[in-house]
Image (tube, rainbow, N blue to C red; front, side):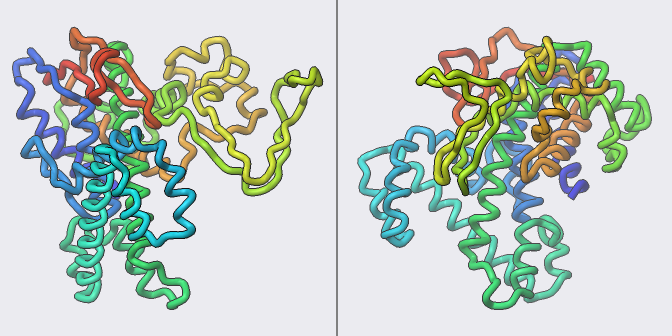
Length: 393
């Protein structure tokens, strides 16, 4: 999978090079859009064995566009979620979609069109993968993803499974779609945040660039060479920059969960209830909703020290506070796709920084929350974009 990511990153870098003057004067580009295109293509090739973007044109195919628009479109219609929750037990999927289509909302109609496009293209990919499987491994090896993408692996395992354990096409489609939707905005916006911070902190950017260039073999080495997987993950400052950014600027700051059983949660600090009693624990009954505040935990001075709210990659180059071990909280890379996302981020950064420098433009960048943190140019804008000056080195 590493070579798939490098191939995509190199194509993206080459495309950027055609848009940035070679004399070092630089050009202001929407870096957030480039990060979104890159992560979507990585997810497409590694997850679906499908290419969304050749980076030769400033547009992607309808399937890729529908994925990019999924979260921005779903925000305004979350209020209709209760309909799905209430009626999903009564109506079939087709009947439920028909019911939703009756809602007089332009956002809902747009969302239904997006899901139709995603379903249609995903089914076509599944059909093509099944046809390639019937032809044997050679057919898969010559396809995008070389038969090592997640969907191909799922289909292979599904073919060999007993009938009672087989997944339907709809289940496979749901799994792969969830993987891509969950991984795209989170990873691309995390990369955008890192590049924003590097533009704000030129000394950190230069230190990170020096580490990456040395790992490539020094100045003048082959820019197209890939840093081996093990060596890439041993770069301490690259790892520190990624970890610190995810700590203090997590792409997802809140998450809701339902308690699967009755639980008693101990409180780190006792609190006084409305009745005046001091509480040392909270009873969470089965079925209760719980809101997890990742950002609060990741920036708590009690755990991280007095500088908890500062972005300091160097903190990861020394032993972390004992309070973190005592708290037994998950690390900043703890989610189902963390290795996948971590590898994407490190490969993109190790590909870009030896070739380009990133500086702030004359416009202010504002970070906003809509489930996933995203950048806009100023507080008034709702368009997801991040303009930085990109200079060729």
